[in-house]
Length: 108
Image (cartoon, rainbow, N blue to C red):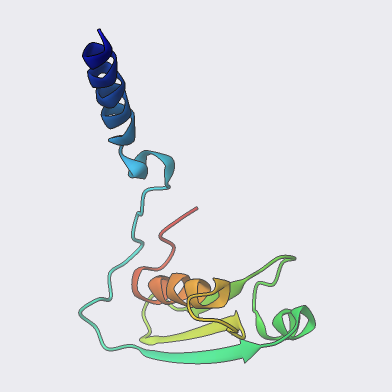
């Protein structure tokens, strides 16, 4: 009986852990694809929200970063807060904004 309980518990754990993590994340829908195109990226680092308000074109409270691009151009401007640690929120935001440079509005 104990072996049956252990096997059942193991099966339940395995089945529930195998869910697709993508189910909880927003699907990516690319506005365009510039992955085979040379683009120029300029990066502006800000230290305060006041600086972000001045530099970001579409500033709204709580903005972590911004990418500005044109549909026909090959230049992209990114504004983020100054990173302080390896892979901190600013570094993650940089990757997020860089994705906008290559794929445009890929999320809601």
